[in-house]
Every structure is written in structure tokens, then in C-alpha cells.
Image 1 (cartoon, helix red, strand yellow):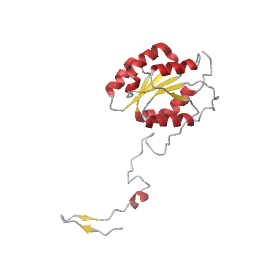
Image 2 (cartoon, rainbow, N blue to C red):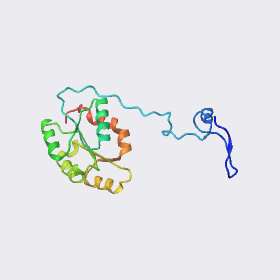
Image 3 (cartoon, rainbow, N blue to C red):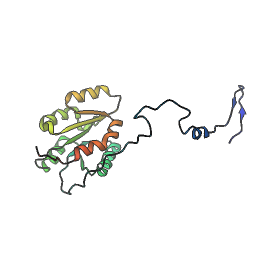
Image 4 (cartoon, rainbow, N blue to C red):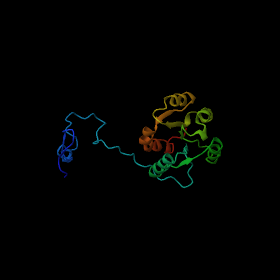
Length: 185
């Protein structure tokens, strides 16, 4: 502990002692009831991983993501959830990969809406027309890009999420779309 001192303006300053936090059980004296869902007592639990797919199983999830942070996050979450995610750079690459899947169409296509190389606002309507309802298209962007969010919805993006919400919901999204369809349509 440091020594108490008085500064030149006559203000007494005492050394900082953080033991008050321990004495208050970490709530800094706040006695107001906590709002449900905003408390650390409700930990976020990832869903159970899917069964390990066959080595030759077709990819059901494709991603137009070049940002290394999100690329590695999606890759790691996919491995954790036993969901094969293929990363593509352009429409031709996606078409080639989908042809190698045979008749099975992708269940989910993820777009980083800031990925200029993928041209998401041009490509999304083409994919929506080609793939119909069987494929969901999800885009993510910065939370301050309201105009881009609106345009993405207008061109056919099924869901547009801020980066933080996308990261938080990624395990559930991959689990839902990575599972093989139980009922053949």
C-alpha cells in the first residue's frame, strides 16, 4: 500500500485499495436487482456438436470471408461443431464446389458484407434466384453500417447481423445448417 498524500491544490488522496470489490461480492455496492439475461450467472452454452461427418460428405456451408479473424473463428467453430465449412472467393469458385457436391445444394452461405472482392450485393440476388428457398444467406457487418444492412436485405439476404451477434450465434447457426436433412424433400 502506498502512502497517503496531499496534492498542491489541497486535495487529499489515499492509496487505492481494491478490497472493497471482494467485500461487495464484485457488485461494487450495486443493490439493484439484475435484469434477466444480463447477468454473468447465465453463461452462454454452445450447443452439442453434430456427429462427425463422413470424410467424403458434401459441404453444406460456404463462406465468402477474407477477414482472417472471422475466417479462423468460423473455421475453429466449424471444427468444434463437426461442420465442414468451405471458404470461397468468388461466384465461379462457389459454382465449381457446388457441382462437386452433386445434387445437394448448400444449406447456408455466409457473406462478410464488407468483402469487396466477393461483390455481395451483386452476387446475393443471383444466388437467391439459383438456389431458391433451400439455402439461407446470412451476412455480417459492422453495427454502424445501417445503409449496407438495408441494401443487403433488399437484395435478398435472409439475415444480416452485426459482427458481435454473428460471432455469438455462430455455433447455433453452424449446427442448424450443418446437419444433414432428416427428411428428404
